[in-house]
Amino acid sequence: MLTKLEMLYEGKAKKVYRTEDKDRVIIEYKDDATAFNGKKKGTIQEKGFYNAQISAALFNLLEDNGVKTHFIKKLGDREQLTTYVDIIPLEVVVRNIVAGSLSKRLGLEEGYVLEEPIIEFYYKRDDLGDPLLNNSHIRALKLADEEEIKEITAMGFKVNDILRNYLSNKGIELVDFKLEFGKNNGNILLADEISPDTCRFWDKSSGEKLDKDRFRRDLGGVENAYREVWSRVK
Ligand code: TMP
Image 1: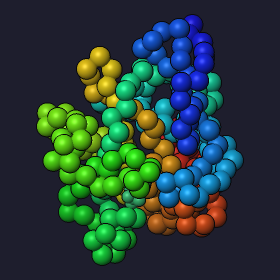
Image 2: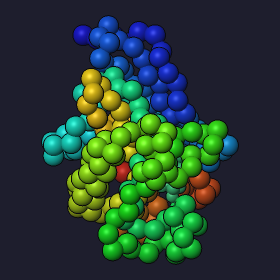
Image 3: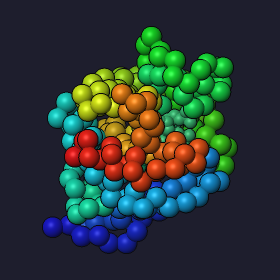
Image 4: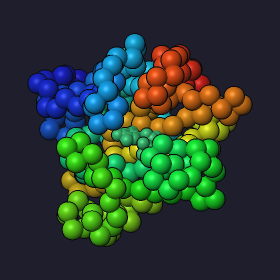
């Protein structure tokens, strides 16, 4: 049995703890919520619980479908045992429907259904406002080489196919989402979390937002939205 030793890292939504095994860490999900690179702060009651449970369900689904992830198993309500990875500082966004920053950048209406999914890379640097990167930027910054970019791109689209189909059967439209990848012993693993914090989920029948946009845009009903997603994927 591995136990939680000292904290290695505290992010905006999670804490990471060392264990007796250098290749295993314990991740604890917090109720803290931020938006706009930490400029907006708040708490979403029980978010840590909902996100830990939703993320575990989706990582299990992806593993069952051949995607290599950091996820090993759930430990209690808000914790997970995962493989230690060095996070590649890229936010990999896959989009099926136009929303958020893409709508603003390209002047397209929110809700416009893309003919094929779009993948985007952002530099994970709050101090720079997470700028958009292309493959040349990624190579110049030595964040990943061309082979790794190809692998990450293929994994991003595969995750999209699996999640979109699964969620559709639960009455949820997968609008877009953000992934992070990490490396352990040279292998690229899907890491971080997959939750209403990092995805846009729209209810298929009502169009209602079931994700962090309710917090970002002060729409109310934030906890209910997270609970609703949990009840559909648990
Ligand atoms: P965007 O439209 O604001 O670029 O967001 C695209 C997707 O990425 C959306 O599902 C929310 C998610 N996201 C994060 O997980 N973290 C972030 O810091 C940002 C900006 C977006």
